[in-house]
Every structure is written in structure tokens, then in C-alpha cells.
Amino acid sequence: MTAFSRALDWLSAAVVGLAGIALVGLIAMMGWLVFGRYVLNDTPTWIERAATLCILAIAMPVAAVGVRERFHLSVLGVREALPPRAQRWIAVGCDALMGVFGAGMAWWSWELVGTVANFRIPLLGISQGWTYAPMVLGGALMVLFAIEQVLRDALAEGAPEKRGVSAAFLD
Image 1: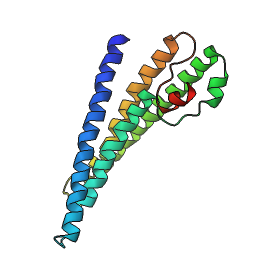
Image 2 (image 1 turned 135 degrees about the horizontal axis):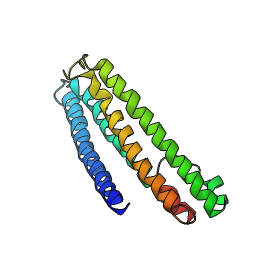
Image 3 (image 1 turned 60 degrees about the vertical axis):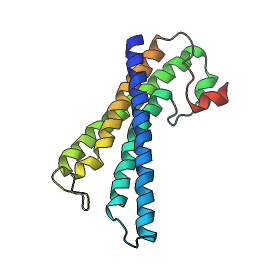
Image 4 (image 1 turned 90 degrees about the horizontal axis):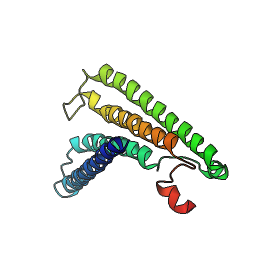
């Protein structure tokens, strides 16, 4: 379990690092858009579509990291009121549901990629499949990170580990 968690530590750090680089690229694109529109009076039309793809490429994999860090949407009030053993099994169930959701997202997004692969995005000239590829990646990462959380919760003694944003408010 330790080697698996270490590998996922590296993977989640790489996802966040790449998302940071993509965010810098997104800011540069938007800067060029504003410069082109207001200074050159010639709006680069491809930037808006490229920015949409960049936002998807940032949001979907980072949302999967949220499953690992447990900053995804969850209501902890009821769970925290229960005994530690019940808390652990509710956490296992919630993490398993996140994994099922990620699997569904990856599966059906992959179908979308295949369905629209032959169509081109106007102004960019790349396959429309790139619109849905970040959802495939994000879903697959959600499954991987959810597996780790389920194993961590199932093997833990007592209450599950508190992580993420809500943990700061609960302690």
C-alpha cells in the first residue's frame, strides 16, 4: 500500500504541476486575446476555442486529485456524528461511489471521443475528440485515486483520515 500511495503522490503532484503550467498558458492566451482585440484591432479567433480546451485540461484532472485529497463535494456532518467504525464504512462507501462515478465518466467520455474523432474543431484544425479527452483522463484518475482511498479507509483503524478543506474546519 505504501508504494502504491507513493506512486499516486507523484502522479497527483505531476497533475497539479501540469495544470499549473496549463494555467500559465491559459493566462498567456487570454493576454494575447485582449492585446489583439484592443491594441491590434484584430481579434485572434482561435484563442477562445483553445482556451476552452485548456480549461477542460486543467479542471478534469485536478478534479480527480480532489478525490484523492478529499476536497470533492461531501457532507461530513452526519458522518462525523457517528462512531468511528461507522464513519470508516461510510467513507469507504463514498469513496467507492466516487470511483464508480469516475469509471462512468471515463467510459462514456471515451465513447464521445470515438464518436466525434473524425470531426475537426473549427479554427484549430484538431479532432473534436480533444474536447472530451480530459474527461477520460479525469475519470480514469478518479478511479485510481478512489481505489487508494477505499483501501486506505478499509484498512484503517477507527475513523477515516480527515483530509482536504473540510478537515481544517473540523479540527
